[in-house]
Image 1 (tube, each protein chain N blue to C red):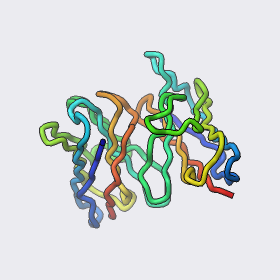
Image 2 (cartoon, each protein chain N blue to C red):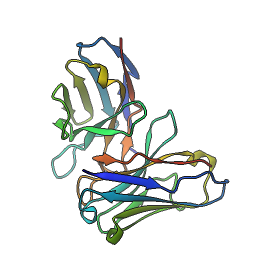
Image 3 (cartoon, rainbow over the protein chains, first blue to last red):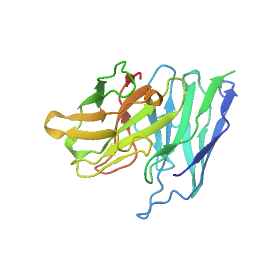
Length: 111
Length: 118
């Protein structure tokens, strides 16, 4: 199985400040057809997970542009340029190369 | 608007069975892969099962292989998970999730989940 290691496990950020979450994979997530199968989800308190970023760097429909994803191969990053109160939740990376696996999650709180 | 509504969760004894259902609306269900993902309350996410758009290809996580069976009825816009030989460690909130295309291993929309307690 592909193992995803997310850091940090938790993050406390003042409103308006940036935040960054790392996701490292145990193997390359580059698919044979050329895309990289790495996704980011957020689960806000009491809600179902919601897709934020697909294929490393593409924002899903309705996702604010303060969210961005980057990386390649085995190292990936989710950045929030200016954290807002509504961004509180647990962020997960996920690989969809085969038999999906998730990172352990990063809990984002507001200072 | 994409909607996924799960049902069928219940309290069941170890060794028992349950059948979860997920009714989809707001998109052409027959054209998309579907998944089940579970979450122990307060813990992380764990993929359970995948089925391709036409039901001809399905996979299960190793920890449910031989006990759970995913299926779909495209005429009813419905996804199912037959859960047999249930164990206490299967206790979780089970989400139905839509793939972004016919065979994708990823998910773009999730339901609200149905709780299974063993």
